[in-house]
Length: 191
Ligand SMILES: CC(C)(COP(=O)(O)OP(=O)(O)OC[C@H]1O[C@@H](n2cnc3c(N)ncnc32)[C@H](O)[C@@H]1OP(=O)(O)O)[C@@H](O)C(=O)NCCC(=O)NCCS
Image 1: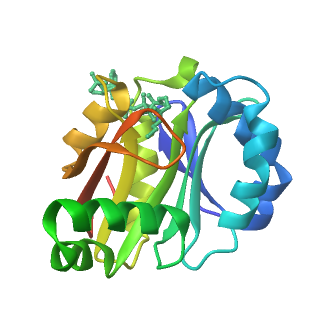
Image 2: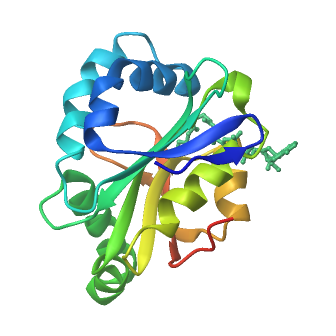
């Protein structure tokens, strides 16, 4: 396990076993960073465990070098037909731009599923370093992600890193919030 310093945090790649063993710590970070109600952690746990079994799953974490607590978490996997998110995005891109554009984006991509930094560790480059380290180990030709519309730190990070619009103000089934789907070509430089 090679540790890469990110200002105060150390960045490490986590195996599925390593994330499973600190799942509730990671979910707690996610719930805090997103400002979600506490029960969300229990709700999301089965989904995170299922994601770990997907092809191309890869996770990078930021750790506080003093107490070894998680300060950031980032993971994703290879997108594929049949996955809920894939089918939702495919439907949106097909409606907007036609099936050949959907094919171009979705033939060979990595879905960035989660990226979160503990609020007291934000603004020090950890988010960018996590994302670069995660994506620099990805073999796919493109990366796609979805993020709520609005002026957020996540948006400025994704723009800074060269993500472009794939869909805007898109409504995923069962969620009233408008989302953007953003994407970029890979590879990306590690730092
Ligand atoms: C989005 C998120 C992961 C970004 O993490 P982060 O560690 O704050 O990201 P960075 O530090 O790389 O960049 C954030 C800002 O810090 C600035 N920054 C980076 N390194 C810095 C440094 N050494 N000193 C001062 N500022 C720095 C960046 O320029 C950036 O500024 P901006 O927001 O004005 O563009 C984090 O804000 C987060 O967890 N948000 C809530 C959850 C969320 O929205 N997740 C994404 C869901 S799609």
